[in-house]
Image (tube, rainbow, N blue to C red):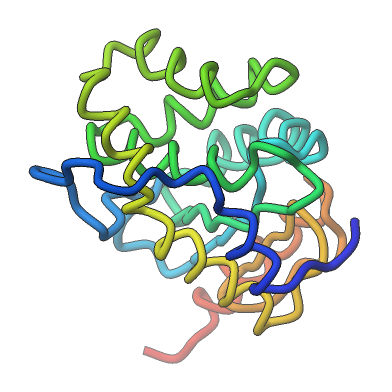
Length: 199
């Protein structure tokens, strides 16, 4: 997938409405990692909710990885929305709005499940399906209050050379083989390193 600049991402956030009441909203991220909070192995996944390869990876890499290594790793999701995907930036912000109501990972799974029909209206419908406070979610999304969270992830990804999604890192090292076998091998190597480290 082609590389995009931070400027292009900022320019793409044109749907943000001015004058939305932000009472009770937060500009910071509420997302929580999966796995073990105190794990010595950190897995970071940079992804885009409208990216077909990310949807596939969620099923064939991320979920099996968590099933096998969930007690030994901490998984963090990072936003890397690509401008060729019309709703990717809005979807990333919607994901953060869902996180504020404790449904980050549930929203992510449902967004991937319905990826082919994503739209501004569909992003709001997902919140309703998950039983979120629809009014609060809509104000959060419409205000654009989460855009800086998304842009910060994107900028961090660009800085470390990400040019496609999904991209996985294990303890700060990019996994060049973005397959289940590749990610698993990186995790196993990190776990072995911890095991062999002197006390």
